[in-house]
Image (cartoon, rainbow, N blue to C red; front, side):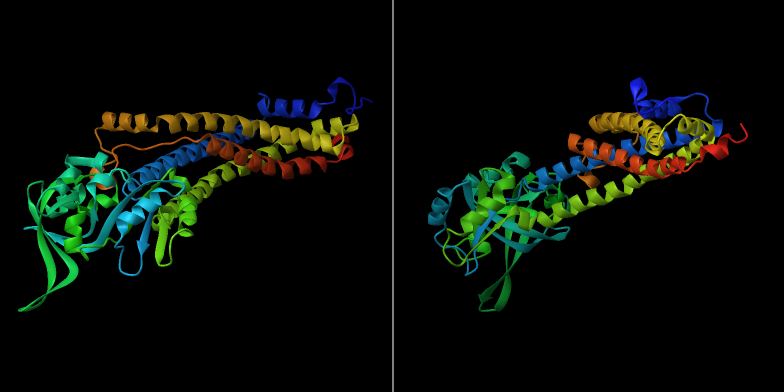
Length: 421
């Protein structure tokens, strides 16, 4: 009797399992189920990789556009603003990790034009130093940030905010601030007419609510003339800002509050990350369904190969070897689907923008209206770590799917199968 534990056929199990996977002599119905399971793997893996790439692209776009206006960190004083802000700025610049600072005053206001009105956030900045802590100068689509340094009360609006108010550079808007002016006639809200001298656009929500004036104008409109609300801080690296600002907090006198972008915008990016996780789990269910089809394929394959199993057992094959045959059988089918799906998903992830552009050109439609979605094309950022995670998760699900049918194969009694042969 041949012993399957020795000799040149020691690795018979994977060999036989792969032969079963790609044999042309299988039952036609079993072949159809096997093709369906492979197709499910292809669709599931390709969809998961493509969607993760698109969500990475959206996350990158969101981070780049919103954080282009948001400083890495800020220092404020909860006791009525900062009077000696020039000295504080010089002190902050000497701190490790800090490369630039700029003063600011910010408050919510009401902007009104002859045809419309809108709530907004009015931020007073120093145009000379603002360029060192944010990307506003590079986002200007009309006019210049330097116009805020001119005489009079000038304002730079977000492009969407200007469209809502129906104003353009050269027009005027009236601003009403949450401050009171006491006159002999009574107490009135403080208001002022501003000249629109520029528009900026970053392609995100700040375009619809943000407005900028000079620091001198802001001190007259929003607060004490000799104080600022705080100092914007730029660090050496965006993702090191939380640690740098935390270290900075310990070196400042009592009364100062230190924050960073992860506190002001962190909830938004955590929500994006959670959405990515949930979408990944939902799409992974497609792969799980394909894995269940592998179970069906192997159950029918075990039923077909009962005689082969009995012969192998009588020739000395152990239960572990029989189980490994059908594990290799199922993983062979899954590996083909996963490989094709990974290649297809990678190709789509790298070229999704071209695909959407081709669809728009061919069918004459606009999938992404910039005025609605703030983007003109589908962003994508393929990360190989995501591809590896999807492939490994799919292989793990496939492996789990093969265990029960493979165990059932070991329960076949050779004597009962061969009794009537």
